[in-house]
Image 1 (cartoon, rainbow, N blue to C red):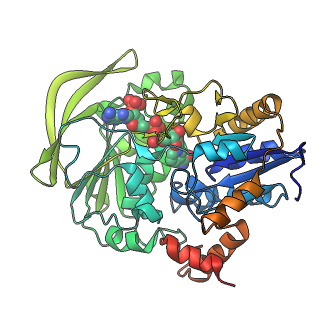
Image 2: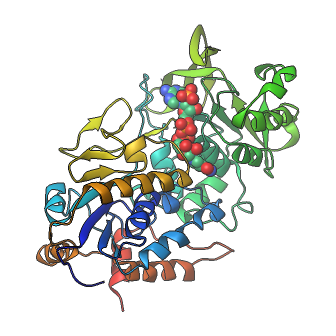
Length: 438
Ligand code: NAP
């Protein structure tokens, strides 16, 4: 769509993940006079759909077709390989656009805050998931998987994803887009025991029933639960929510035999990490036994040591701060009131709420913030995308458009083999070269 008349509302959305796309969809649906540029530091769109959703959960990734339909609107544009802070400042974007929406997600790991956290062999879920999902930032992570025992800390879906990807065989991963550089060490690893550690109990776990069920259906890995950690079965009828559906699965796991498959997945509850042990590399994890009082985790003082060679904390994320944007340290997100940070500056998704909710949660969230913007911000005849194009030319920036991205996508699909949907390219320069090819 051409034209940047004084009636055009120019919006820049920073971050091309689900939150950014749902916001763009809501802003432009039925509003021809709203122009949205979705800017991302990577040359690839779709954020966590590409680099966060597990490689063996391809059906979840199909939602990207909806984002593609949004991108096909004439008033929506993807501007990839343009980094806020490196290539352009927030102040410049605020000058060019009537409104800026931060949809930057939560890319940093929440720290465990315990002794030994910096030892080699402890790798947060951000880098670890990014590595097996071929995120360019983590392509060289090269974790040492030549270990017998792994501890995955946390009882959320990310912990389940990590444990499952480590436990599945190459055959079970066929049809996934697991990064080549991760497939080799994972499938060649001698891992025999994977501990998924919850600091509270099975009733408080935040993993969802479908994800838990999958863990009881693995070819080479048996899921185990200590029956003594499950509540009295007489209480099951009174359970609600996810716990109601999780409990029958956990009871099945409690009846599994440890020697029935070569790899064991231990779902261990009531243990909280106290210290990571080791000299230069991780060799163990000191844990305190806990109990749950009124939903809260309370230490008992009793400790035990779990000998492990690799620890992957999956305990949540934090949004990366941006200079001059107020930040809520407690929740690891931007300070905002229902998405509004200050005049003309908004946030959506994990940058607004903190790292909770599924992909679908971003839809109502994006709609709410889009409606707020449409009600509160009025066109001021700003340059919008024409101004951005000018800066891109002046600074000789190599941006990637949606059409360029389709070339990268085609190359990835053409390189796929063995039933994989794509073979992801991990090198940004290679992607940009492809994007600029004819
Ligand atoms: P999450 O669901 O919030 O789980 C975080 C886990 O870490 C909780 O069990 C929490 O325990 C634990 N934890 C936090 N701090 C800890 C500490 N210091 N020591 C020990 N344990 C600690 O977060 P997530 O797994 O990162 O997932 C983020 C969001 O993405 C969730 O909404 C999730 O459902 C979603 N997601 C969905 C899928 C899917 O649908 N397949 C896949 C991946 C992620 P407490 O409960 O005791 O705080």
